[in-house]
Image (cartoon, one colour):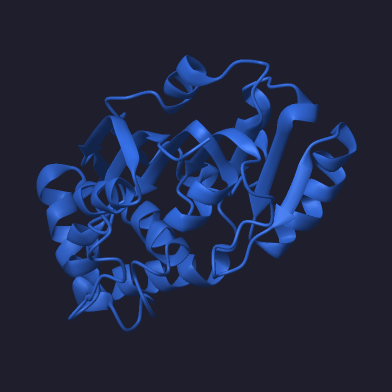
Length: 255
């Protein structure tokens, strides 16, 4: 295809599509994501029982939390994104679930020793704060997006790309927990593949995940997009890799 025609098509797509929010339904048939070798929900249910006080850090819209069917009166959440906070005030709070906002300092606005189990999926955390609000022998379960997430595609599209969270990985996070006297019961790390089957899906992804593709746009990054297009025409997809790790840890602290 003519290069000028490609550029016009991609710029037109960029101008017409709404890239706000966290909704990938538009490209659901245009990419493939490898499954993780662990099941986050199944791991949580191994440790969760109806008598335990539960905290879900960074609950988002609360969809996953509600799928656990934990008693509402024994459930609390934190959330840092203001639109989600307002949404949760109407969705979770009327059910009897406690809600606390959390800021960039990762201070958890709950009392010491409030929870038997804390879960955290893709939310930053302060180890000392988790230890403080988690009861002795309480369980902390976290699944994180590692610092190498998406680096293959970021390096392909963004000249001189520098990852923002380079040191975020299983080894360093496990060390931080162990130094705070957590006992690691389970840990794993994985780099699942992603495949983009057309350029529109790739452009959509790069526009939404802006911290991995800083200042990305079709006009300024057109030469880099052409390199990705060459890979697409050769292999039938553009390859990328995610980075995930999970830790289950017991809180060793005096009763």
